[in-house]
Image 1 (cartoon, one colour):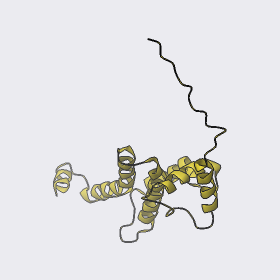
Image 2 (cartoon, rainbow, N blue to C red):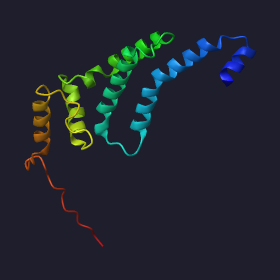
Image 3 (cartoon, rainbow, N blue to C red):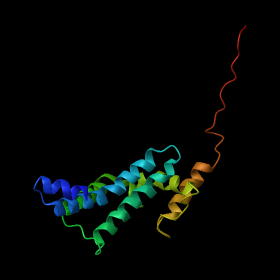
Length: 151
C-alpha cells in the first residue's frame, strides 16, 4: 500500500512498478538463496551441484508457471538462465570429465546421496571414482620421516 501512495504522489504507475518489482524478486530470490546456502559454514562441498540444480529447476518453474507469468522481467529471466547455462554447464554435465569430482562430492554427502545422478548414466563413473579414491595405495603413501630433535 505504501508503494501505491508513493507512486501516486510521484505521479507514477504504481501497478506496473509493483509488478516489475515482484517479478524481479521472484527471479532473483533463487540466486540469493543459493548464495546464502553456499556461503554458510554448515554446508559441505557436496552441496554445490544440488544448489545449482535447484536454481535451474526453480527458474524453469518460474518460466513455465501460468498462474504468475513473467511479463516485465522476461529478459532478465532469460539472461539469468543463459548465464547459469554458460557458466556452469561443464560442471552440471554428467558426461563431462570436469564434473566427476563434483558428483563424487555430492554422492559423499549423506544429505544428497544419489538423488541428483541420472540412473544408469553416471552412476558407474561415480562409483569407479569413489573406488579409485578409497583404495589404499601403499606405493604412493610415504610416511613422513622421523624427525630428531636435538637438545
